[in-house]
Length: 316
Ligand SMILES: C[S@@+](CC[C@H](N)C(=O)[O-])C[C@H]1O[C@@H](n2cnc3c(N)ncnc32)[C@H](O)[C@@H]1O
Image 1: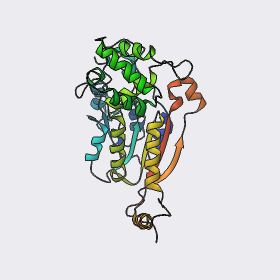
Image 2: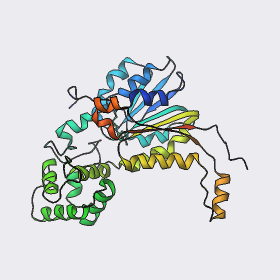
Image 3: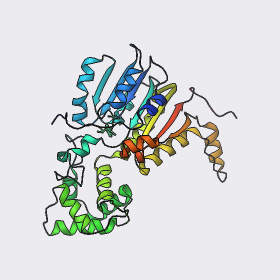
């Protein structure tokens, strides 16, 4: 269904656009179009010769963007995973914005299967035209693999218990096709860790991250970003949980600091030869006013880095 009834409140809107846009004539990437909150503000900062290339792997997001495609010749969108940005010409991009995770319309539409609060097919794919749904994957996954996914991507300490309960339901032929089927199995196995948190919160997060290969996508896009950016181009990434934010933080650190291991002469050699491609411009959290107006923003962290001049090597 092409939505009109679901909206998304854009997080860290002004802060991220201020950080990402440095040249009104530049070419920018919005890696996560969603409902276009960032794209529209970004376009308002560009001159007639500026360009914005957006990505989203959700076909409803891409359908939503068609009005903007038709009305603004500076804007285009690709129905693709954002790791495909690696195909864009090197040094041709002035700023890259990534607003990770899922949009409110994806969570709010029960038919997408992202929410344990709403009964729907247990799907959770951002791009429902490819890959396996969570229900399909769970029908064959081993207990050990399920436990690993729940532990690694949900940081759930009861991962083994939950995986065992899923396998046991499967063996008893208890249906596991709907979001509520999974939510019930988890709720009958463990208590939530934090007060007010549904026991299935971490399990749903884990399966969503796994089924969409969200961390692999992030790693591939980050790896491509420095070479896509022109000198002084900006990378701005908004994360919503520590698994993502840690990766972004470590990636920026690895490309902006000399990594020196005093025990290893090899390390000194490597660090002397390495080119520092990024300058860390720090992190920004939502204001108290934003968190009050949009509680979903409370876990958001924006990290910003700038592309250094080309071939800058450590003076030695
Ligand atoms: C948090 S929402 C972005 C909201 C958007 N900034 C706005 O203001 O409306 C994240 C969007 O990114 C998309 N997305 C997430 N991971 C993606 C990936 N690896 N490739 C392409 N799109 C992705 C999701 O489908 C979703 O529409």
